[in-house]
Image (cartoon, rainbow, N blue to C red; front, side, top):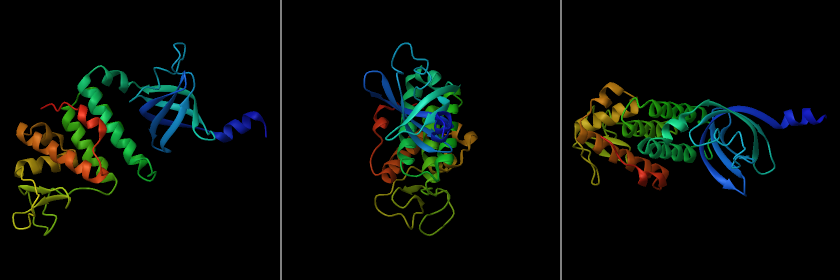
Amino acid sequence: MSRNASFAARSYRTHGIVLRTYKLGEADRIIVMLSPEHGQIRAVAKGVRRTSSKLGATLEPFMLVDAQIVHGRTLDIITQAQLQRPYGQLIAADYTLFTTANVMAETAERLTQTDDESSAVQYRLFHGALAALSRIQHNPSRVLDSYLLRALAAEGWAPNFSECVKCGRPGPHASVNIVLGGSVCVDCKPSGSLSPGPSAVMLLAALLAGDWDLIDAADMADQRAASGIVAGYVQWHLERALTSMRHIERTT
């Protein structure tokens, strides 16, 4: 087999969004990206920390790139990368957008570490949320809450805010039980349930469905209550809090 044929057999090309980067040695970086076809990819970008590198600015967090990658013994190697969407540049210029995107990236990384089956869905959800953030279409906190609920739903953890999760009585109900996975009626409400009110529960349902007319018109108190419930739901299913969540400045 020729050298070129061997290279072609070991290489692949894919679109991907950079989730995070790690320094490696004096000039390299490990790039963690999410791809619709290959799931989560961890690959080395050699020499990108040198000022002369053409890839350095391209392989930054939240950039959408078209990458040529070669399979390696321990880590794959990125040999080429072309910028497709500069989400990172737009998001990094605003602290609120940047911290919000970090929470979404940590969530995407956690959810795709071992599950390749849902990678295409997780990629689309993450891509859509980044695009919305970069265009500042909606309140960043609401974009985050909607993304978190939908990303968990894609893994089979979809909450039910439309009816009582115990008896099936149609809602909206005033209370939510995170452990049970959704809203509960007054007769089924166990201890430890939260009671944000029917309008906040309706907002949670809208966040899950992506109903932005209702989301954008929501009352400030309902927005705060919904954000607290979403954070608790994420922590329950991921079994520990998101590290990047501590840096979030919730906007109303």
